[in-house]
Length: 256
Image 1: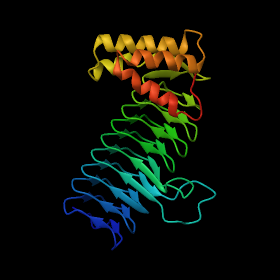
Image 2 (image 1 turned 45 degrees about the vertical axis):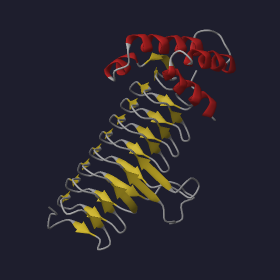
Image 3 (image 1 turned 30 degrees about the horizontal axis):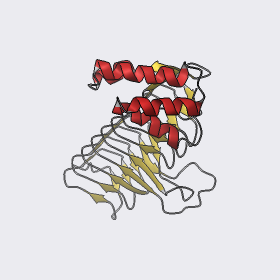
Image 4 (image 1 turned 90 degrees about the horizontal axis):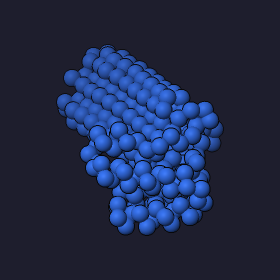
């Protein structure tokens, strides 16, 4: 159902069962798939593709121009997967030509009120951005990551799968998988054991991930030495390979 007070560009492709509330505005080149609902006063602009069964609350701003002084009106893109919940006043911006022209949000994510996803970010699946959590440009967020309220992430940082930031964290370097950070300055504080348990990781696997954390953060080893030790540990516990691969790929180095 599309409310009579909604404004929709004639070029937008809207599935027949999409619900659009009063005073929502859908611009040119927007595509919205089946089952998605937009509450009142939602704005969707740009070349934006939204998948199935998403719920977008009032005053969210989706697919707007990137906040980048180099942006000069080029055609850039935003893609959003399925089953996401985007709450009030959340802002999500399209990509830039300085990257791949594309911002991506996966599926089953929760973006709480006032959260911000900047240009060229890539977010996996089952991610939670709590109230006012903000990502700078070009940030990559792995699946199952949780950012506490008012967490901020510096541009170009990568956050590994299953990592966790406490409320008010300021992340300026890469955050390895499974690691929990918090405080100001933001420091590592062990692994996200509760999250791993909830996601079905065995007690033995969680214990081995804790040992990998100690090798990386508590052993006094250099980063390269710790990486070699983790490679050996991954032979027994494949889940540790996530940490090894992340360390190899990191270009900003890690919070340590």
